[in-house]
Length: 114
Image (tube, rainbow, N blue to C red):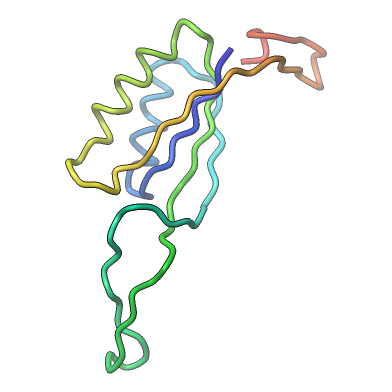
């Protein structure tokens, strides 16, 4: 079992949710996060528009998705196809191994938890 972490702009959350439904992935967890990276941030107006400053951090969404090993490659391919808007701040995808998963209510373990 693998965990796919996707860091994206807020606009892509609905598309990712629909994609996971299409692949019959049971759940998705997402967070509002802030961070900085290589992308250039645009200056914003402050107050009555007299001052402008460039924010150091930008807001993004981090989605965590648990998938069976066999589904990682098709999902990552589709994510990169859907999210790629051709600009630097498109986002990041991280894939990591999940050693064990336990469902507290049913006491089941492994891929059955998905």
